[in-house]
Image 1 (spheres, helix red, strand yellow):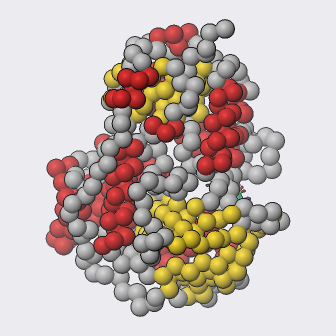
Image 2 (cartoon, rainbow, N blue to C red):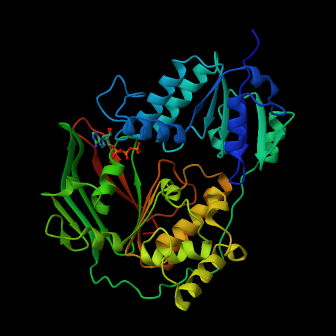
Image 3 (cartoon, rainbow, N blue to C red):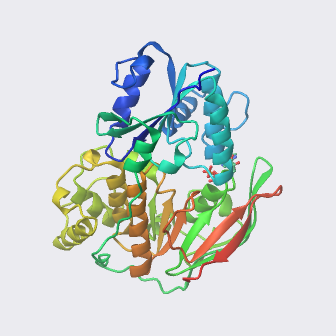
Length: 419
Ligand SMILES: Nc1ncnc2c1ncn2[C@@H]1O[C@H](COP(=O)(O)OP(=O)(O)OP(=O)(O)O)[C@@H](O)[C@H]1O
């Protein structure tokens, strides 16, 4: 029997992925992939999960989660992807288009999904659109690259691997200082003491002890469903689970009349899903300046100081020439750099980056990591960087590792040599 054909298309942050996927799924002819015009295909992507989440919520329906009490929204990334894959396969498509299938997954869940996809590839054609070379499945037979809208086919796998080696990038300018530093007299910003969380009688976090001090650089690591989001939402004030527990945020005991607004003022936050909130027309300069006001748009004329600060950030990011360009026109990698500058512009005491490199190609992920290392080195801001991947090049001082346990995850701290 012939070896089944499976396809990998390497994307970068300038690729018109949506355009290609739409043509593939609607049967339009694509040079190099003509055979798919007469076949039925389905999409496996994060955006599909969001679409189903939205539908389930708006119509109070259960589509992907029929067999489950829990809502799609409250599931971990691994649980959500499993539910989507099962739903798609039940419709028996000829091919599946997979967009960065391993993003947001921890190493163990990645390898389970990898094995599952390899098994599926024997009967269903897989077209993987991936921005990380490491994500390409070993069963791949045909290799492409999507440059803008142009699909480039490689004659052999060797030609592909030779043409697409990884690169490293660095920033040279300094991190711009804040206009008015936010004064923090405390040495300890966050303190969890024996904090536990349960949902519907199931304990998710068990006896968490975690102290984050001024200027520290932490990586928060844990498998899917281990409680990372739950832990972060207690810090950002988005969860009520911290009430009545021994949790102190910026010197104030949780539930002692603290204001959520005050809390948010002290935290810079970025997660890739946030970029969707900025759908209007904002220039890059205004996007960065909006970080001073914690607003989605700019409602007042910016001050000269704010403008000067935005220019420094744009120069640091190598995007000064684009200062009047609309945020919407940027590539995903560029958008994340701008959003991080926006979160950092005030030099908040704490910066939380929640899976910030998910979906970035190798070059843009290294650029992002170089920026975070630089922020850690040149500012007094404490950082929590959440990621499943061992981010090559990231230089945290400490890891806070959530280890799953039958009574909920417990936390362990490891210290790196640079601390
Ligand atoms: N509101 C909720 N109701 C019920 N269960 C919940 C709720 N929120 C979270 N959970 C469950 O708690 C566990 C921890 O979820 P959480 O999202 O914090 O994990 P995570 O480590 O952030 O996962 P991922 O890396 O996949 O995002 C999961 O099993 C999830 O299904």
